[in-house]
Structure formats: structure tokens, C-alpha cells
Image (cartoon, rainbow, N blue to C red):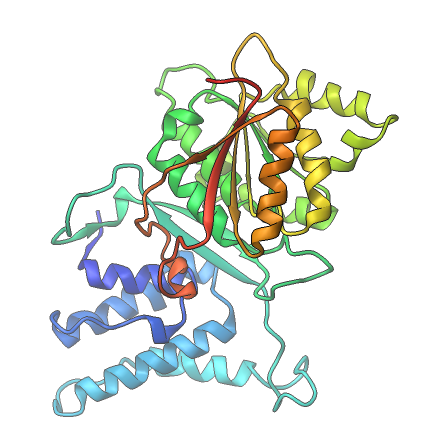
Amino acid sequence: MVSIHPDLFQILRGYASLVPPNRLQLPAHPQTQIIHDFLVDQILLNGHFQKYPPSPEYQRSFWKWIISQLEQRMANDSEMEVDSRIYDHYMELLTSSTGAGATPGLTGQRPPSQAYVTHFWRLDQENGLPNAVDLDDYQTTTLLESRTMIESGTTGLRTWLASFILAQYLILNPVLVRRKRILELGAGVGFLGSVVASLQLLERPSDGPSPGTLRMSDINDAVLSRCNDNVNLPCNLSSSHPDMSCCFLDWSAALDTDGIAPLTSLLNDEIDADLIVGADIVFDPDLIPPLVAVLRLALQVNSRPRSALIALTTRNPTTMEKFTDAVRDSGLILGKVEFQEDIMFMESLERGGDANSGVNIFRISSKLQ
């Protein structure tokens, strides 16, 4: 069991999820030596971060900030000094930032690199602030992500805000995925899928039946490959799921007379989902007709209830209105889901202000449930 001060846990979470240092704060109350030793033992020498490291760019920024903070606190104590391993690591990062691969015209700096991002979360939410955080109480989900908005012509190589909000909702309501057949639309790098797979395993009794099934779909081969790699990282609980896979799914087939039959077979015979999930998948009005057509096919009246949970960030109110109108016009039933405003995933702080601002979760079904 590893227990750490709650404020230091915030630093650990921030580093793991690449929260900018200017949004982090070293606590004032633990002794400087305790903070220093935590930084060495739980971050610098952490085996997980050595195997799945944040980007060099982020590490340079983080350790530059840490060194400055520690030197200020130790300035009046001649018996304390910063561990040389922190300086050595920072110097290695500085050395690696220039040279071959640097971007011309950018003072020798390399372009933003892909990075491992680790998210901490737990099933049972504590009331109030604990005196100490037991790391064994937390699950982690680690992903290799792009640090740019668009890479290789797709936005699917990083995790977006609505995915965190929908993941939080499912973590707080795990019965929604327990022993269910789940289809994810627009799976991206696999964050939401990895959380769902982990929830299914955590909610399965040790001697119980199958945890359920999970199919993560997307249209981009590079995204599907990254998704498959991420959910199967050995550090992720999802890697031990017995019935989880990625699949190609082209929504436009739902509007194609030649494609609708095989798509219907895939959705209703092979996947046969109890619950469809998707996050930030309506960023272009042109995606609305095929998406709604897919939802209609997948939510056809069946012997058991089926529904979809779609989390969307309102970037353009007109686009959001077009989506909700299209869902209702298709004969599907749409309702807005109330969800907690608490921040479970710390990287939401990058947005500033209300981390949940502009995100809605919609429940969609073919009939009242």
C-alpha cells in the first residue's frame, strides 16, 4: 500500500495527465523534504512513468518548474539540496530538445511529440477530503496520444472533453455497462473504451459469468490501430477483457442502398448492442444524417431495451440543434441526462473555469424506457 498526501496526489495526477505546471501548485503544509522525496520516489523514479512517459516537452516544462520551486524553498536551509538525479534528468531533457529532428525556424525545438497520458480514477467516490490517498484504491488508464489538435488528417488521436465527462458518468453508474453488450461509435484513441472494459471487469463477480462485450468502432485505420494498442497496453486493466475488439464502421453505409443490409447485419446480428456510447462525435454538420441513421438501425425495437448515451460539446449551437432535431425527426426519443459537475479527471482543468461547461449527455432510444 502506498499512501500520499492528497495535495501531493494532485501533483501526481497532474504530471500523469500532462496538466500545465502553471495550473499546478506545490502544497505549503507538508515539509519541503517530504515534497522533495515524493517527487523523486513517486514521479522521477516511478516505474510506470519510465515505461509510459509523458512527452519530453511536458517533462521539461514540469521539471523546470519543480527545480525553481524547490530551490526557492531550500534557499534558507543550508542542509537541504535538490537531488542530483532531478538535475541530471532535466539536463538530459534539455539536450534531447535540440539537434536532429528539430523544426527549422523554431529555435531548434522539436515539434510536439506523441506522449503517454495516464488518468487516475476510482469507483467509490469519497466524501470530503481524506487525510491520505491510498494509490491502491485507484485505477489508471494509460494512452499513447497525439499532442496536436489534428494529426494524420484526423482528430481521433487524442482524447476530447466529452469523453472524460461520459467516462465519469459511467464510472458513477457502472450498472449501465455491467454484463452488457456495448458498442462505441468514434472510439478514437480508446480512452472511453478502456474505461468501459475496466468497469465491466471490476463489476464482474470473481466466479461470475462473462463481463459483457465491447466493440469499439471508427472509420480511420490509423485511429483503430492506436485504439487497439492502447486498450491492450499491459498496464491497463482493459487488456485482460475476454471479449473486446475494434472494428471498422462507416456511418455513411446507413444511407447507401447497397451498404445498409450488411451494416444492419453487423449492428443487429453480430454486435447486437444493449448500449451504444459515443463522445464528441458531432463536430461537423455533415456527420449528423449518417450518425442518426446508424442510431436508428442499431436501436430498432428488439426483445430487450436498447439505448445510446452520446456526450457532445457545444462548439456551435446550430450544429447541436441540427443534431437534436434530426434525432427527433427520425422517430427516436431523445432526453438530456443530468450528471455530476465534479471533476474526476484532472486534465479537465486545462480548459479553465467550469470543466463541464458546454457538454451535454443525451440518452437516445427507440421507445420510452
